[in-house]
Length: 97
Image (tube, rainbow, N blue to C red; front, side, top):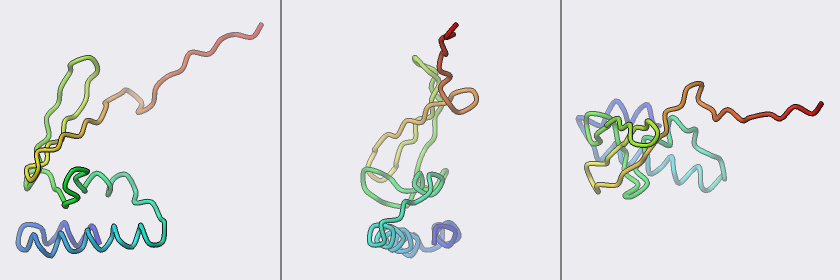
């Protein structure tokens, strides 16, 4: 459904919103998690379908730790995604000798 929403968002944004709303309802009803790559296409503030360059803005920031700031152009909600090398936090392991 998200792929169909991507295709139709520029021509008919209401239909794209309908696809995403339906996908969310199905995932809640059957208690199935939406994968992260699709979950990031839904604004956490207004629950609308967002697509880069169409209705949300992406900026990189390097304050404290490097991160992406995604701003929804519908409601102004900000989402921050940390950028780390390797994608995971490296934990220090103590030697047990």
